[in-house]
Amino acid sequence: MLFVFCFLMLALSAFPQTQKELEEKKKRLQDDIKYTNKLLDETETSKKNSLTQLHLLNSKISMRQELIGTISKGVKLIDKQINQTSSVVGSLENDLKKLKAEYAQMIYFAWKNQGAYNRLMFIFSSEDFNQAYLRLKYFQQYADYRKKQAKIIRETQAALSEKIDVLKKSRNEKAALLTNEEQEKLKLTTEKKDKDDLLKNLQDREAQLKKELKQKQNEAQKLQKEIERIIAEEIKKREEEMRKKAAADKAAGKEVKETPKGFSLTPEEALLSDNFELNKGKLPWPSEKGIITGHFGEQPHPDLPNVKINNNGIDIGTDKGAKARAVFDGTVTGIISIPGAYKAVMVRHGEFISVYANLDEVYVKMNEPIKVKDEIGKVHTDQSEGKTELHFEIWQGSSKTNPEEWILMR
Image (cartoon, rainbow, N blue to C red; front, side):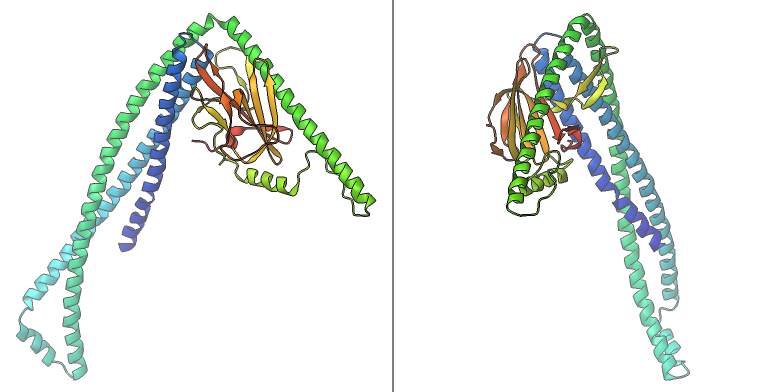
């Protein structure tokens, strides 16, 4: 009986941590939705239906669906907690009933044998001293046992009262969550209707939207070519440095190792590269605030049928006047200026390169060492649409990677 009670207590103790995690995720999603609403308000001041509004609405709908899923998980978790707490309450009630019955029998026995004369007669009627001693010890142990039983009953009653309170609290929490879930579903329905209305308005501008998309894709290709050119030049420069070093070592009679292909690293750069890789999934965001409005890789366009878009990094919607900041210690290895695409900065972290694009202003210089969260530049704001969007990439050598796998998702 005690083993079952302890097991149930341990099972219930695992809930608060998971509940806390769900509450933290719920709050984070609510904050992100609130921030998205702020960005939507900024885009709506332009009085122009835009793809930016559509992207933000899509992000908000996605976050709202995730929020509803999180609330639903919370309801299921509380249901499980209610069931297990109910089991504990049932076990405690049974235990208390048995304990009280046992205690009642002891009281009745004590009442029947309450006379000191009877106890003395029972002891003095012993056949020898040892038996008399054992009978005396029996009365003492019996008295101690009664006290322990009374204490166990009090403790069991306290535990039962506590678990009944927990059960009431859990049921109230479940009712609140169910109400919250219904409210979020109503908001989701409204947001989907807003999206449908916006899509109808954008369909009239499909030709213009395709033209804008083509222009952005051209700008992205120019940026990629420039990044690849800078990386190729660095590799070529390093290979030349390694060849010269190998020639000097050979002339000096030193052992010459085969020159590695690709980007060669100094011991310090190799350590920085290793540290960068160890922080995968933990890097800070390249802007203090923001939400992801464009994801990595090839994907269908959200509103133009039969059109695919390819993103070499991610796009982050942020506040007007926001600053791009370094995600890790490194050295500025490239400053790019492309007409129509504004400015971009490349920061090397050993083998890795982080890219910050769509900047109005650049605060750093070539070959300048920078620290994590140092400001790199001011993010451009499109006045016609009221959007401020940072484009962010992470490269490993000459290969693109998904930045969402590197930054700490919030």
